Length: 122
Picture 1: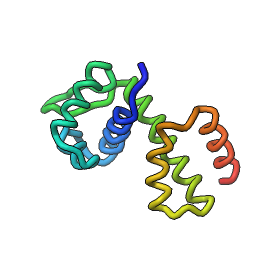
Picture 2: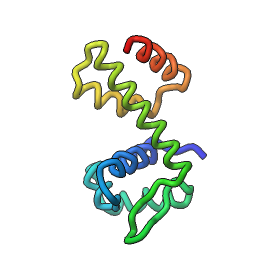
Picture 3: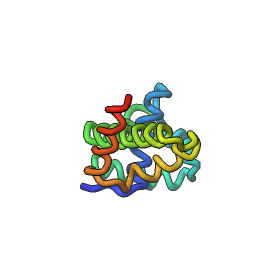
């Protein structure tokens, strides 16, 4: 099943928060994405229905194996695109914002070419 851009943002955010916090809750996601708690609740429900996340003790939010794979892929795209943009002279803040947009729409073929080019220059 394909995930919409907003779902991808939630998955990537959960992955990032899991690296920072001992447990991820809806309020953490709302704060990180600057969205309302009802918006997070709806997104969590959709992600649960599609088996991208599970709920642990005390309503902690955990990525399923499928969710973790997708979130990791999205995170990789973001990081490579951001660093690539910085390497060609784009200011860090702009690169961060643009990478966040680009990661969701770039084709696999184009991303792989950018990734290969970027990695060859490291």
